[in-house]
Image 1 (cartoon, rainbow, N blue to C red):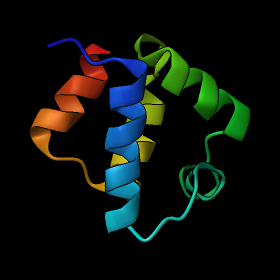
Image 2 (image 1 turned 180 degrees about the vertical axis):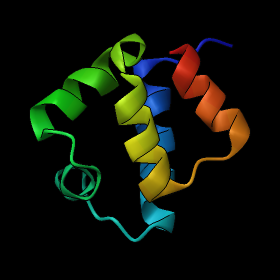
Image 3 (image 1 turned 135 degrees about the vertical axis):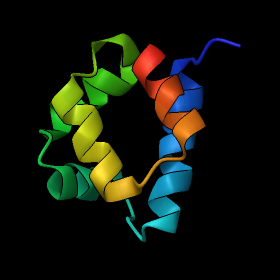
Image 4 (image 1 turned 90 degrees about the horizontal axis):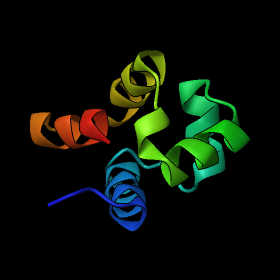
Length: 73
């Protein structure tokens, strides 16, 4: 199954709940990814850079399967 924008956003929200992060603005601050850029990346998951994926994983601690979904876009 291809990962779509709503699925990525939903997956990120689930990990944000586990990490006690309330919104994407706070996620942006925690990861060091500009808020507008983060929203663009969520809209187009293929555009995530390696640095951004590492930053997200450092904060949200993805499962291997979910990290692969993000990498594949």
